[in-house]
Image (spheres, rainbow, N blue to C red):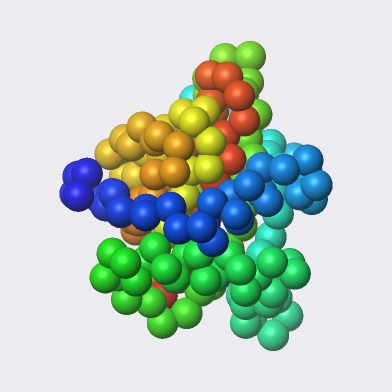
Length: 176
């Protein structure tokens, strides 16, 4: 446990996790540019930061039928890795709602992204930090300074700080 809002998990860095991480960090992994990080407006020293993303499972509220949809050929691989970490930490899951790899580049100066919730109904977030670039995660005022291969879970409104140098690459999964 890190604090009241953020729980640090054990990441046993299985071979499957390490192979997935290597795949995501490779030059062959497809990234797609997003000019903003949230549909929210910039506010109070927070910036709607651009990022590159790769959607494994698209969130249900973005789909016409309102159910999560697989968007990547690696969806089975990524769900196995996420489930193995959650199961090893005795975290129960009924269903994934969304899984995305996000890549944020350093800005000229460190900025805070826009506070947001990934869904507007009860859910839990899992973040796996695939690089050592930093880029703190702030959940309802509680700050987490990540190291490479860290895994955390949390609920609630959150945002991140852009990294000082290097790419901040994370795997984010939401689930119920």
